[in-house]
Image (cartoon, rainbow, N blue to C red; front, side, top):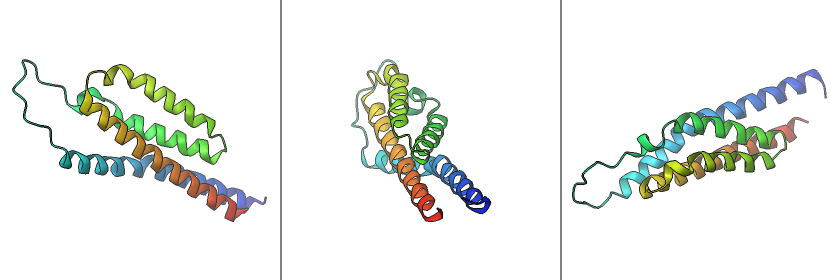
Length: 135
């Protein structure tokens, strides 16, 4: 592999990681917004204490999503798909207590997580395809 191919490979890896981490947030947010409009909660009698919103329960979701997409795409690019299992386990364990008793929040968590993971996997596979074209 010559210097040009190495630089091109590094550029493809950086581009894939950047697109995965950066563009995944607006995409996931758009999808969650579409879902929220279609599934309006039924009118319940007012509770003594208002239910926390998804944003209150799932604090840090934007940054967690950016980091998880970066890590998943990175695992695919370096050929370590088993690392994805570690990422899934860490996220599941980290959010387990937050989701307990919040049905609508857990749906949002699952949809957002799956959309985020699929986006990261697609970008990672696209980066691999470009790697194969380079060398």
